[in-house]
Length: 467
Image (cartoon, rainbow, N blue to C red; front, side, top):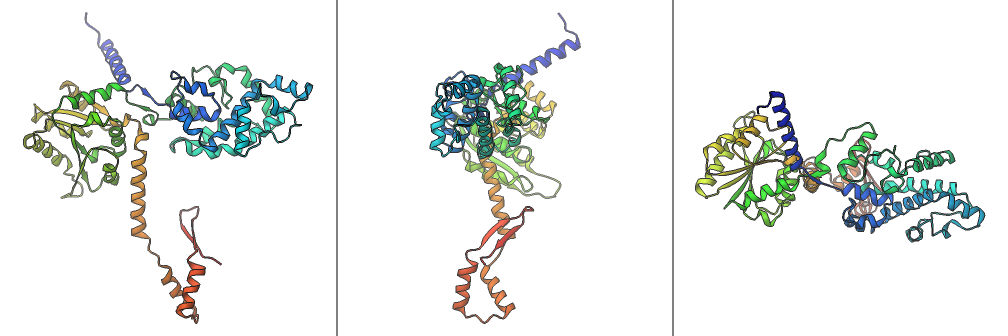
């Protein structure tokens, strides 16, 4: 049976979709686990290995005072909302205090808050609505202390709003919030209160990708950095491990002009160190115009790194591709290296692949940099390739911070020189102050040494001397 051209294309699209899904199946739940803890999802959910929230993150956050306070406040608020009528009746008809209603409000949350210096119920005689308002105010005051628990790439303003009840400091606001909550109770994740427009979307906390995508859509925004919320699946990693296992010697060669240091670092750090034992070294072919982040790569990967900086004969002509191809040939013929992992999206290296028919290759490329012709050629020759910008980028955050700190220290060294003793000598000369060396030393120690430095809103350095 012959397929029409349109059906053939549909079949190819389906196969491509299945292939992409197989390559990218490992979901991440770091963000949703942190959010679930703070919003007050019960511990038994974390203990269930079939539920997304991770017990490891629960145990880590439970040692954080700021996180504990927000969690216990949210747990108390949810408990009051779920049992509002029973609690209200007990306050009005049984004359009980709200802190004694432990059958409705978790006593451990109240006690933990008191141990952390927070009194959730300052006035026992107030109305239940006023108690909710007071808790809403405490959550609003305290939740900003938890912004550092989430990655910097996540919009904190969007996330913060989920903790805040709309108009939650007014009686009308808390009534509207309660009505919305009870009307759509089954749509709230694990029936825990949060500020959103509830609808049936399955488990909102199923994965970081699902949660963050929805979060940005609610704020009329679009989240596109998917390598921050999911990782490549075992299909990709097992192919890499099989490639290494079937090799005698493996060299990792990197075209630094056509590869991202942070994405590559994330890919390398996600691989099992023991299974990568045959990788002899990583050879970086770097140009003077590429990112300085390559200089700190060796501090973050367990594989030896050789850094080759290639000078340019002309500013508009790089020699990286030629030197890299020559090095692959040299390693193959001289050092009996039979397998090469090439990190580059440049099709110029196809010539070296075809010139070494008995060598084995694996390519690490990036979306948007590698054209369809190159990928088609790799597939036709049976060469496996993967996308380094699909690896979970959280693993590369440390290299990014280290690279930034290195550049900041270099900038300070190049641009900031300031000697306080010279400054004092200049001031003494300008004012013609009759000071001995002993007096100048005393003045220096008393008024200049304890100086304070700050940064204004425009990023300018400010130095304040003691009055």
